[in-house]
Image (cartoon, rainbow, N blue to C red; front, side, top):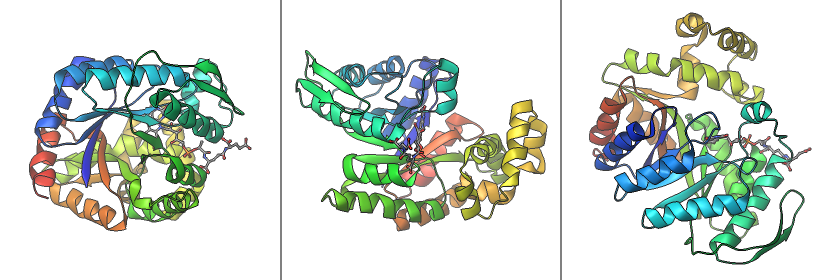
Amino acid sequence: MTFGIEFVPNDPVLKIAHYAKLAEQQGFDNVWITDHYNNRDVYSTLAVLAMNTNSIKIGTGVTNPYTRNAAITASSIGAINEISGGRAILGLGPGDKATFDAMGIEWEKPLTTTKENISALRSFFAGEKVTMDGDMVQFGGAKLAFKTGDVPIYMGAQGPKMLELAGEVADGVLINASHPKDFEVAVKQIASGAKKAGRDPKEVDVAAYACFSIDKDAAKARSAAKVVVAFIVAGSPDMVLERHGIDVAAKADIGGAIAKGDFGALMGDMVTNNMMESFSISGTPDDCKARINELLDIGVTQIVAGSPIGPNKEKAIKLIGKEIIGGN
Ligand code: F42
């Protein structure tokens, strides 16, 4: 098993660099930085992390093919790979529709666009001159003027077809989920894609990109994760809610409270214990360890501690290092 950590650059970049260094000292393997236009730029953040860390791998978690052309992505992550001495990883997903709506970008054929982008990226990483006439991606002989190295590509995916595609073409997959029930399904879909492509499913690193909150006080840990879980419920497909026995009508109620900014309601009874169990890894180190072990048994190979990480980020990073990574 490897351990990753996610940071959202809605915090100043230098603060994230401090957390990333701490995570490296605590034995984490990977740092993933999210990419949304309204936060600080992902590649500037990664460049600063590259200069402030020595061994931890650093990646986009995840960028997308709509706001950045594949040639630009290859050039950006190639530069990060160079600065970091070969520690870059590229996480790529189709992106977040809500932010694209705000930017006036149409979200056409996300699966096809992701697939064709990965194909182009592999060619750029191999130093090839890229000529492509895909449905969504075209290149007329583009070539980078420097060697990027062979950067691993991880896909951000949840849907059945996306997971199958990840099994076919990706080095790893970052799945926004925390519960064994979701991974039982996902692992099968990834394996089916891998088999289709003649690959060993074990070649694909399956990461639980989880809403994570740890503290010695279980109630504090859960309380810190509540609003994140509310957002997950509001954005989950009905099928996923039904899988966890959650009333689909609750999605509209929670969505309404989020839209009104009624955080009092969200912190009350609206986010149930079942929702917390289904969509977060939260509680004491023992609670978190128990859930992690269940996930590993099912075929998860990387645990990514995603937002909020804990009520106090520094303490939480140290607690994961001491009680979970060190305890393995
Ligand atoms: N998105 C961001 O914008 N920024 C981030 O930092 C970010 C981080 C992140 C981390 C982990 C993670 O898992 C996801 C993350 N995301 C982030 C979201 C990510 O970019 C994607 O939005 C998300 O993972 C995709 O969700 P999904 O796997 O459910 O895929 C969607 C597109 C879907 O509908 N998939 C369907 C499926 O079954 O998998 C397939 C849809 C399909 O087949 N479409 C056809 C096609 O060609 O695209 C077209 C069909 C037609 O009729 O047009």
